Amino acid sequence: MLKMFITSIKNLFRKPVTQLYPYEKYEPFDGYRGKISWEKGKCTFCMKCGRACTSGAIKILIYSGETKEWVWNPIQCIYCGECVRSCPFGALIQEKYYASPITKGEKLDWSEIEKKAGRLEDRWRRQLRDRRGKRKSE
Amino acid sequence: MKKIKVNQEICTTIPMGSQHVALPEPVKLVFDTENEVVKRVSFDVSYVHRGIEKSLTTMYDFKKAPYVVGRICGICAIAHSIACTVALERSIGIDGEVPDRVRAVRMIGLELDRLQSHFLINGHLAEVCGYENIFMHLWRCREFILDTADMLFGNRVQYDVVCVGGVNRDIDEKTGTRISEALEEIEESIGFMEEVFTRDKTLVKRLEGLGVVSKDKAFEYGLVGPSARASGVKTDCRIEDDWGMYRDFGLEIITMTEGDALARCLVRVLECFESVRMIREALDSTSPGEEIQLRVRDNPKKDAVCRNEAPRGELFYYIRGTGKKIPGRVKIRTPTFANIPILPHVMIGVRYNDVPPLLMSFDPCLSCTGR
Amino acid sequence: MIEASLMDFKDKIRKLYIPEKVHYIGVDAYEGEEGLEVRYWFFSYETRDVVMVRVSVKHGERVPSISDIVKPAFMGEWEIADLFGIEIEGRVENFFLSPDSPRAPLLNKKKSEDQAGREMGEK
Image (cartoon, rainbow over all chains, first blue to last red; front, side):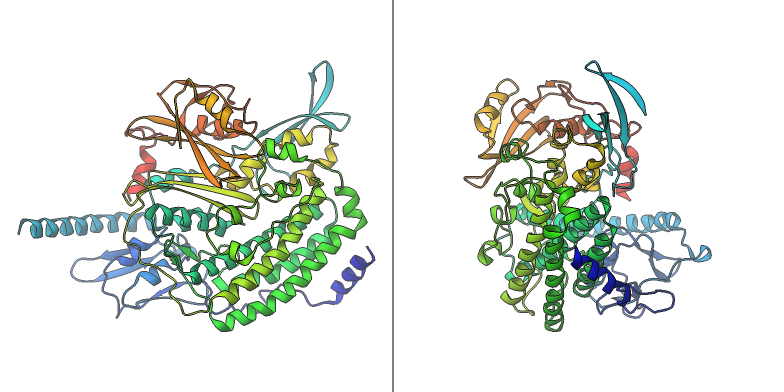
């Protein structure tokens, strides 16, 4: 009991273990699971990351013509890093810093994006099936 | 509060939960008390069912399963991931090929998880007893463990490090030495915790002789984990179903014979020492740079089970492989599920103000139970 | 693995289950192509083996409770009663699911109330 008393007195004067966040910047350890960043030049839009993603937070949109876009939903992401490991070209990098909070204007209309990407995925699957069918018939 | 008649006696019904200061998670316990002494208990766990078993058989393929089951519980996440992964590997048939480095990293993760969970529950128990000072101090010590986990796996609690056929990230040498330093500090704080739970009058008097479970009762009700070991049941799934290298390292099963709330606490404290030893052994056993991930080509095709020792006790996974990407059935039996049936029997005859510490000494995790 | 029918599975479990030597793990149900089955899981401390007792059950059939032999079994039984809609003696309604949730969610229903959930999965 006495020891507990001494410890609590000591604790009064010790430095706090936690950080005073807004005044003191938090420096994460190396290898912290932060936001995913995408490098456009390296990406070939192979969709491997989208299929590896556990929470379905990565979609690829193809607009008319050849403009393609990689979309990532930071709210749905569970930051497991599976997409980064699945990428064969190193186009995805998991950064040390976490994603900044999202304001109202930046929020993605995810259900709309999912619908669009779903149509594209269907088309892509159909093409794949056709190709396989051709190969078999040959 | 309403008064009802039970066996011709006037009883007061006191509901506890689904939200209560002593409960970290929602469960509803209804006590019929007579002059503060509990006469009858009924409980309801229907608050947190999320259908994870269903989603594993409809939505996610087996490679995503370890991440999904990690979300069942916030505290013993890696225990779930490991149990699921080992069961899947057995189902695929590659469990014999898993490299030693992978086993070591998984062991380090699980033991770190056990450390922080035991600190958490012992601190919480002290708080429920009204000893907030120890609660604060133990959680302060827990902060170091969480920092160590952050350094190792990139997250504080939700490690997400296990995947089918291996682990995601290796522990390099620099981090290894830093962990060894951190472990010394952690060991010191475990020593402090042991001293508190053996010598502090306030806690010992409150917890001694509370909710005694005899050895026969523990066998009869199939208790698991520290609660069973406190009653003298020599059971530990790490030895019985060894997916790691626990048998090689000579893990010691800590048992006590008293079976009261204090014994359950002390078993957890002494297990922390064992965990630290296991982490040291695992760090020394293999060196970084070995292969950490196998290529998985097959789908799960056999029926497989895994029993894993989560911080709270035996965690049971059953996977029915159908040869497809998505397993046919995933059954999860969580440790708290086995520890709840005895609660009504232990609580009868206990004063109502002793109920929260008694409940917390069993270390219930209701999110696990609900799934 | 022990195969049993509804008539004799209690006897088989009574013969198997000795509290000091056999640990009761849990009870589980599974709906395959052959129909519904209830599985009881035990662990033997001596041989370190997991033993399964398999009982095939038809839909709507009443399953007797084993909680007179294995005391903690009632919780698992109530759970599968809620999740699979199996009639088990002495069950408590809505023990595991909240009252407004869909009934028997783990059964493979063909395009019925859990259609919405499955469509989400396909996305």
